[in-house]
Each structure stands twice: as structure tokens, then as C-alpha cells.
Amino acid sequence: MQITVTVSDELVREAGARGLPVVDFIETLIDKGFSLVKERPVLNDAMARIRALRSPAIGETMERKR
Image (cartoon, rainbow, N blue to C red; front, top):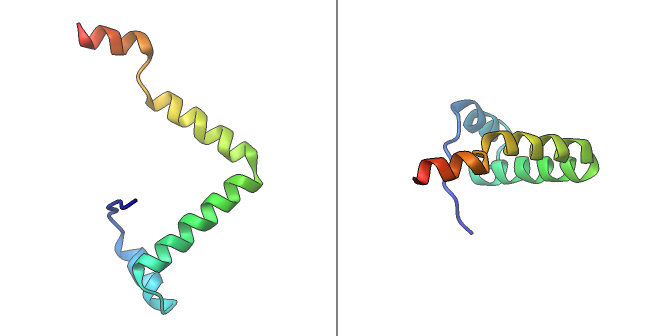
């Protein structure tokens, strides 16, 4: 899978300071975040609740389609 991400100048500088290509640095950040979520289920639960709040309610979706 390929995705496009806008990366801040701060992350670009940090990657350079570590001597890593930006793509590699971002991949390590994603991997670390994923590992952290697996180790701490409470974070995963919190993220699920945030996603649920962002999603429109089923009733709202039906209202918009009319």
C-alpha cells in the first residue's frame, strides 16, 4: 500500500540529525506507535473512541442522503 503524507520541517530536520532518509524515519515512528498501542490496550481503546466521535452517527448519515 502506498500513502501520501505531509511531513513537518521539524520531522525532516530530526531525520537529518539522525542520518536517516525521511521515509525511513517516518516508518520507524509508525512502527514505534503501533508497538506502543499493542503493548498498551488502553491507548487502542482511546483511539477507537476518538474515531467513533469523528464518524457521523448512523441517523445523521441517513438524514444527509435524503
